[in-house]
Image (tube, rainbow, N blue to C red; front, top):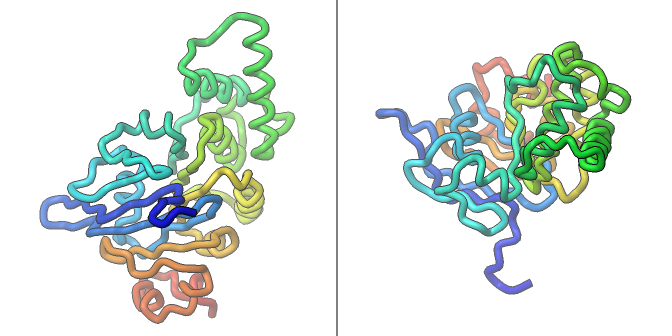
Amino acid sequence: MAEGVDVSVLRCAGLSRSFGALKAVDGVDLTVAPGARHALIGPNGAGKSTMFSLVTGTMRADAGTVALAGRDVTAMSEVRRCRLGMSQTLQHASLFASMTAAETVAVALQRHDGSTISFLPRRQTAVRERAEELLADVGLAGRGAVVAGSLAHGERKQLEVALALACRPTLLLLDEPAAGMSPAERARLVELLGGLPAGVTVLFVEHDLDLVFALADAVTVLHLGRVLLSGSPDEVRASDAVREAYLGTGHREELFGS
């Protein structure tokens, strides 16, 4: 490998965003390696949501850069970043509740391809087959004919992942994917995300720290808008600084054990 070549999927340098006198994100550096399952965590008010928005392009940074696979995307729109391989699910993503699961994924596939909905039988068949493949990939095999609004909460979360995968991402961004899930649904989510192809790198924001340590192979901890620590799950568990940051948040036992 040539010296100085950036092989990271995502590299953020000096990202900052303020709201008046509040520095929500303050000079954050973040590197996500290819194939990683990288968690972004921190106590309430740490800057996780703002950082996530700066990465996805839904919010502009006051300073700093965002690079996707070595390409500077700082000035690019959310849509343009998606075209280049950055796809996301949202904490409260809205689905087309009256459409079936397969129809919803088919629409996402055709929108990503930049094509209008086709009525040509061959095109319809190809899109339908790909939609069914994606549903199977996320654990929804045989559920394609079910109306999206009738799916269970955990299944809707799975469908959101299928929609994100329809964009053929190299970087999949998940905002609190386990929000509102039962323990059984969270276990299925860990299995789902852990089983994604190695070519799909995952960066996720999550409050469920059991899920974080079950899934992540790298963790970045934010505190007061800055990176407190970035390392392996074991390094994060062993950190006195991280322990101190979580004191009084109600997560101490959840993070470090009783």
